Image 1 (cartoon, rainbow, N blue to C red):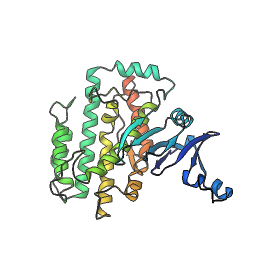
Image 2: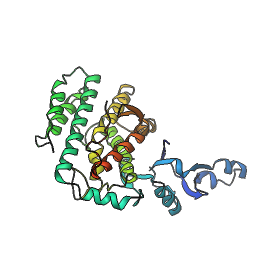
Image 3: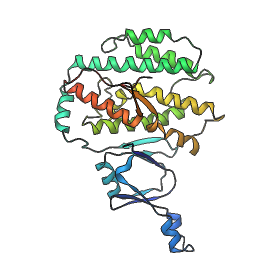
Image 4: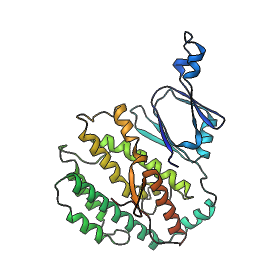
Length: 310
């Protein structure tokens, strides 16, 4: 089942009733001139089990603890945003799988050679997907990227991921003079930041659902990063966000500000078409296949991660 992604950008009161998320609009409830029938019609309910991601993008949103408990029990990712509407926080359940302890142990006991081989697969598929995006959207030469992808060795000691990234970012947004991929950089960095934050939440949610620790990465190991594994596994998925951003740019003259319309397009990331193991599915479903295969790698049942192929 494909879960819903909900974004709340206006003041709202979220409560729980009969396993349903109840939405109340304060300005409607507090308006004494409106009849009671109209106030009741302003109330909306959504089954908790249908929700996969919730984005809280307003400082005047009120959420009951019952809502948070129900969302987390259903393995929902809750994202909070700052005053600039950029995601800054992520809330995930502590337990998302029946065999979590066993899978934690398998993940913690994973050997260094295994982790290096998994990172090799990750980097290779990321570069191949980046090559596809660059080849289909520009007239730039991409043979070098295919060579780099094939030359990636266990653990990527040659840092071919970085070499490919430099070439990719130098050419993919050539129409934006001086563009450099940087969180604080010029647009369309703002769109990429927002899109990657959504993607990161979806990946983290899938990792928890597969009984894995999002904190313990196979390559990333920043002591201040609580989602190192999510940052590892999302790498081959990033080009899907890049393509969406390119499509947005091609249909909008100004992307300096993430408007409500642009945000709605970015919130469609969990629904993007993705091909994994020659089968097409929404990105949210594909990430679950990827993280499930990763859990099998840690358990010694397979040696390959099921990554998306463009």
